[in-house]
Length: 183
Image (cartoon, rainbow, N blue to C red; front, side, top):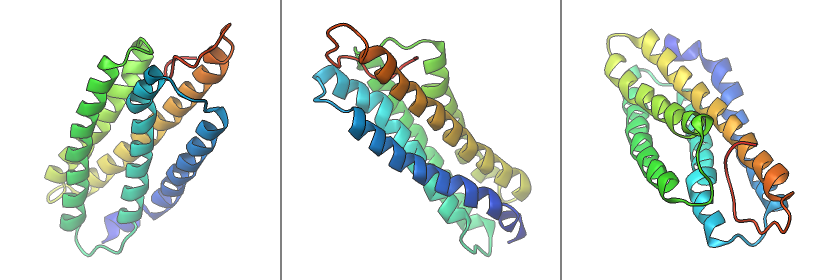
């Protein structure tokens, strides 16, 4: 199928980038990790875990879209299912963010941790409907959703790590009670 073949270079770059960022996130968390208090663990479920999930979805979509599909229908059903499941997962993340007490979210947090992932998952789900009649536009929507998740994840990784290093670690008597958020 020519529409997906034209995107091969994009997904060859995006997929491994997501995989490398997953690995780097594990390394950084190991290096800065301490025995987390309950509040830090609670914030980790709200901020850190979703980043890894979004990176995994970028990696999954990149791998699947590089497969030699003969028709857009099967892959569009798969990326649509990923979009719906991701949207539901993002609802769980939103609930976790509202319940955690370790960090008060600001505008930028709402944008990068909530709005952009919701938008990416909606693009994936919606592009399934467009795929049979508007292949090119649907594939562009999937590319946009994938890039959106990758860039939001990069921002969120930097945000959470820099917050931990520059704010939590430098507090007098730092006890590791905070995670996620703006640096």
